[in-house]
Image 1: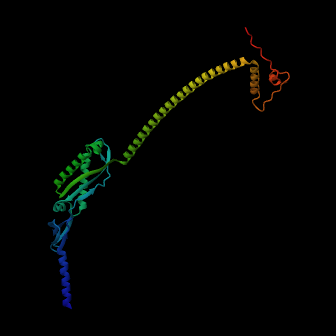
Image 2 (image 1 turned 90 degrees about the vertical axis):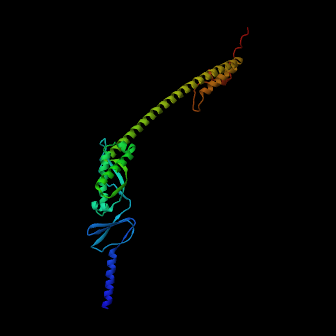
Image 3 (image 1 turned 45 degrees about the vertical axis):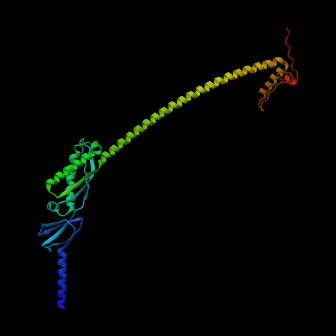
Length: 300
């Protein structure tokens, strides 16, 4: 039994020792072998590898993929005309020399990202200070990002960080919140001014159109009234001429007709009351049948 226990214990120790000597490097990683706190070897190809057991050798891993670093700094930067802008940017980078990277920054990718962020921030501060807001937003935006990338690459060459910067992009450039609110208020005031001006112009044009329409209406009504009066006058004259001609033919009928017209004009309402003496009044002569015949026209 003691022999079996010894064999089992020996097998377990052997397995533990073997597992501590084996390590796997993923295709997305660098494997860095340390020997007594010094870099012994950098494994760049994926696969299964051997090393000495701890504490003689140890292994650390670094990401070999293309990494993205997004800005998280809200501190404004002054432009050439002293306008304060808050910018957002992102950086694409990778570790190319793990040995240099570890000696300069350690085995944590976050340390490299922090150092890179500071360098990119300094480069943006320098380049934005040379340009106006208009240039940053439209005319020289691409030029700005190219200059920032160039400056960052130059600084990295002098520091031997083992890092390659692939691309730098500015995603947003905006005024600080207080200035943004002021700009929005100015834009709103300008839009209101233009709207009020358009309303005033429209109201003036409306009044002008209405005044012209009223004038044309008055002229049209006046002309129509003039023509109507003219036609009415011509009709009255023709009617008078017709009446005169008809009455001239029969004077007694003419007098009778005038009496009837007078009665109709006097008693045009049911409630009208006239108190007269029909027997002695000339007004009711037609009712009494005593209309005098008109003298016959003299013949010459």
